[in-house]
Length: 589
Image 1 (cartoon, rainbow, N blue to C red):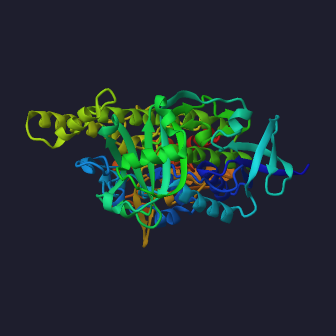
Image 2: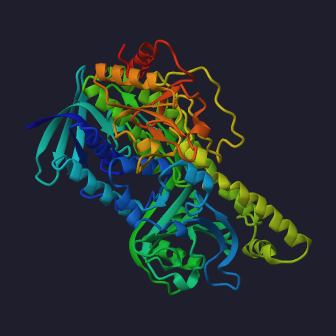
Image 3: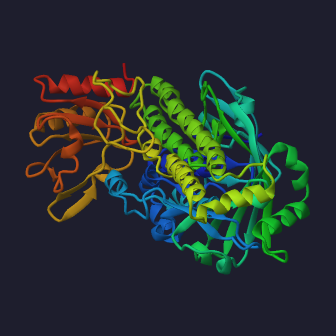
């Protein structure tokens, strides 16, 4: 049997696996990616890409391609709820419209948080872009239709058995580390890890279709449309445009999600039944779209309590599965690999101790566990929204429709209904403005040098992201300049490198960091940053507002743009201090 030897084997060719491959290539790590499927995903899911995800895609050179074909910002600035689509006198009436995410990259808090705007691109269109870039960076290392059959670990590596379904050959890969990015298809089972949590919270059938819905839709700025159906006992549908060249009401393709309780599953047994129910919910009896695929799925919230098993790591859906509400599934997967890949690169070339890899789980588990919890809460709160409208399966269709129509009636009943709905809808900003959940994580592990300062108070830990320089936090965003050059601070150092950012009087830290990094073979860019003095200037004082340390202090930033260490001021033994910080972060002791 043929045996290939490679430092890293990535199993899975979805968003997590392809991002891992691109990052490993960017960091100079030789690897092979195998995927059991012959192509990238054919399922129209996972479409919202948050700011930190786009930062990672910027590092690997694929962000511009994504922005070029993604939803224009002005057509994803809002979400809205409607009373049906067609088929009755009140069909299509707007119940509530809410600004979502960055409001078309117009919300100052989001613009100040990152050089990258949020965007939207369905997985069926995203993954081919990721695959193309992964193949550009690793021309002979991306192998689709190659299925992992088994794996064995020993003290020095992993031996994986793989079948090439194209040639029929079975071969082995001997690797130092295996990244399980296969959505739980095989790797988790092979290493004995099960996902735990909430299962079957709700069921849905999804139809991906080509259809002209422009005459039935309004609001060009709305991305996700929540459709209430009082005449069907409070059922809710979700309508999302898929592009590919037009968005909003003019979109060529759509996905239509129909939720239902488990006891109604028999109504969705066959595709013919699904389409009959879709026509009822759309309200057009002769509606005949071109159907691409019909899928049925359960809403779950699951996590793996163990994500590092010897030399095998679980990432993305292999370690956490989310309801789609909030768009935290794919983005959490990208954050997983962004956390891990630089660590593997440093361990493989001897710049870090192997114990650095033990920090993956304590850093990422709290983050993705919270994201799963938030996704579930986002989903369940939609029942609160429906109840606020007086729509319930316990009422007759006529009663539900009468209650919903109160939203447009004058008088005390209408006033009370509108007030209840307004309060309930405002609460759902926890799904559409969860800025701190998306990018305000804080890591704690041996790869973070705790400086003993308390976590800053936050008046809304879900919605408000307040950048700071406390170790464990993401590097705050600022545009910096020197001569005629302007960059985002996070992009001053190339991908895979450490950054030492000092105040304008922190030259001693810069000199010490450069010397200590050079002695350890570590790539590090050191710079002084001030408003009027420094190697780079902060013209808008964006970083100075957030830096918290003095003009002679400094921070050390990891390759994943997370702050690893901070000095509030100068130190007489700067070389010893920064050398000790590097050694702790990289587990060199």
